[in-house]
Length: 253
Image (cartoon, rainbow, N blue to C red; front, side, top):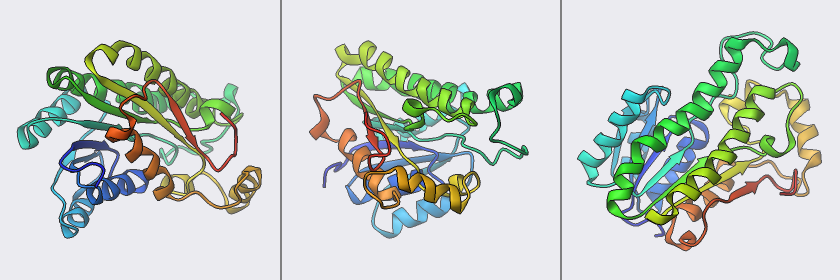
């Protein structure tokens, strides 16, 4: 198992990609801290059923108090933090109509909600775990970006901008933390039809996206999980500051 006895925090793990990452990490032998603003207990039960060790927390990644408590509880339970997967993110389903719209029609409220979770939240989670990783002398941080960071989306400026911020923050953190033996990388998925994505894209729109891919197959959470496990493992010890696109060739990066 590639992550045997590693302690991993995975944010946004109540459903979708985060749930997939958590289950895969458990199968790879990791001890897990799963966090979400939603209820993580169903995923925790799933992990325990396959013999995994897990701590489920309700965490708002936009809160410095919540993220600091997340890191402290992880160390209190498992004595260390080896891996942080920054998966928590907002795509849509914000309770606001006409979420996809031209830039000049996007409201400041919509902009702030996306950036608060996708950029500030990632920063606060990193800020919370870095002191522990520095003390250990090692660690792996894997950020979940998006291929929209490379391609942009004309009706989705706030989201693509936030994911561009994830790519830039990944490079900046890798530069800052290399001397402490902390690797920081990102995975940029293409369109994976999670619950959140299904609230945004129609069946017709997803078919159009599929046609732009070099490999004409829908991406599944396990396709992304494999890349995240690799970057979190010892196999990636000499990889840092990189963004790996997992998008079936939708765009070439």
